[in-house]
Image (tube, rainbow, N blue to C red):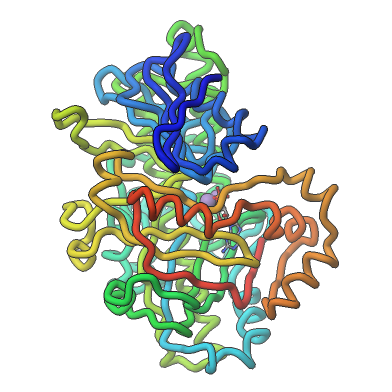
Length: 474
Ligand SMILES: Nc1nc2c(ncn2[C@@H]2O[C@H](COP(=O)(O)O)[C@@H](O)[C@H]2O)c(=O)[nH]1
Ligand SMILES: [Mn+2]
Ligand SMILES: [Mn+2]
């Protein structure tokens, strides 16, 4: 594998073999020399062989190995000649993050963090296979799949004003539930308003550093402001949609997929009926996830109200998807083109003026939320025009994993992880001891490094850094 350095943080793997385009990687020298990074690069080179890929296959600095496509990867395909791939979206369709800000300061919460974390733990169902209070039949669930977060608000789980603070208004089209299997309906019936396990979390944070005073003021953030971040997705519903369509594409598109370098890259031509069916079913799962995070936001508000009183404000700043494929238009080599942009572990990052940015944020650009880990920090940034020009409007989605789950269990000890968090005064509650070890701060890359790279390259701009005070993990 030949890797050329183009700039301080930009690398290129020139096309070779069946690659149709180059691979471009945004990262630092330290990552390039890591053997695990090579595994993810092999996957990126495989993505570059897929039909209709446009311009380049991209890696964000949080890149790491994933199912077929690497996590932290972005690939755009021509709508006419290109494909759509479930592996390019991920099993947790529309996994994403939301950031809410409160009118509380560190002084208000510092002596009540344990009660607050306990209240969140009480209100938010979490853990493997957890179920919630909302149980829907097929008719009810169909509405969720079409209406997304709007369904949650109409049903009393959220506020009308939240909707313009969610990517695409929390509702994506086309989303036709007739493309969704019985099994997915079954799995989705009682998991709305649940966090899930592992990497999913609710985290109470404090703004600890501000990089852009004007933007921070615009978002209502000051040093000491208490924020809350929620990370979850489409639960078993999205997983089933992905599973169903991987099988359908494997069984029905044998000829089309016969030369794949990796069978996990299974895909359908975007315009093929199966490509269109997956696109629609995937959007149903995306809407399920938007509704899920809206309900989780409502449950977190209730937890704050229980501890700090009903007049406490917990306002949504923004909610982003980081596992999704979307039809978007970008200028490529001087020509406007309609593309199916796959962001698998990547955040959309649209600049000021973009019509896809809600009007309340259009003058500053789309809010970008990058979580780090439960012991270090997370960030609020804004999208940029440069991202629209260079990365199909994309940036990083997290710090990115460096240690696999089983390696973490071998290397780290539950008691030590707890002690490390306690030393930093971070209150943590988790459904499982194993999860806490698998998700220890050490398993993730240094988020400060990742964010500095996307900031310096200019594909998003730092606004504020938040540190964790209390975490609920699935
Ligand atoms: N602030 C926190 N960030 C966390 C925590 N656990 C994981 N993470 C970060 O989230 C991203 C999401 O990635 P995904 O691909 O698993 O969806 C991950 O890369 C980490 O950087 C946490 O408890 N708190
Ligand atoms: Mn997820
Ligand atoms: Mn995620």
